[in-house]
Amino acid sequence: MSTLDPVEGAASLPPARRAQHAAATASTRRPRPRRPRFSPARVGVYAFLIIAALFFLLPLYVMLVTSVKPMAEIRLGNLLAWPAQATLRPWVDAWEAACTGLDCNGIQVGFWNSVRIVVPSTVLSIAVGAVNGYALSFWRPRGAGWLFGVLLVGAFIPYQVMIYPMVRVLASVHLFSSLPGIVLIHTIFGMPVMTLLFRNYYAGIPLELFKAARIDGGGFWRIFLQLMLPMSLPIIVVAMILQVTNIWNDYLLGLVFAGTKNLPMTVQLNNIINTTTGERFYNVNMAATLLTSLVPLAVYFISGRWFVRGIASGAVKG
Image (cartoon, rainbow, N blue to C red):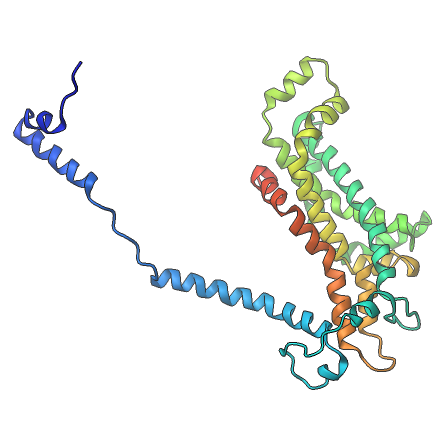
């Protein structure tokens, strides 16, 4: 079978159709207009991005260069100048010799205290939030809507409102100023947000999958452990990033509930910076501040791809 040439086919059409065909052919062959490389809108967007980057990066640059300067250069007042003789001695002093009052063991004490607080608090809050979100998404017990509403309200109540009642409660059960006490506090305060994240994530899973597991004889824990939990890796990473960052950066709860032997890194950093005995070493203070922020930065850089995937998979849905 022979193919019809476009030109011959167009010639056999009526005059009106031939004109329409010619106009359509000309419009398809017409080259698209090229966008200008530097339009006012694009220049404005790039200017905003550059200013925003400088706004956030300039303090980081000042902290970084100050932390590797000797005190003799800092006293010259050249805040933005690159160090003439860079040294890592302030970082070593901040880690193992900085003073918090009369205690001069560095910020490493607060680092290990924060690790002991963050790890169990993150695991427990994610575990409780995942079970709550799973139950509220699929099993829906009586009063599930009211329970979910109460949890959401709890996510927006300021910490300061509940500090004194929680102090009294923990003191009555002999957990105040202890490591289990601060872990329990972070688990309780993290449960509403974790429940919201996991409920919205599980709400995006087809209900037919859950019904098929029920038909196969799966119970509450079997479906959760063997079906839902393996599918929850993206949202678990999102929850882990949020909890690690919030708990690591916490100051108020750690100061009130941890006790003097379990003070987290943020409290130790405040004590180092506000120590007024002797000369104030700004390079050591900047190094201690950067050491405190390394863990959240590392978590974001390592798990950033999973964080975006979890958000796109339904972490903010609903």
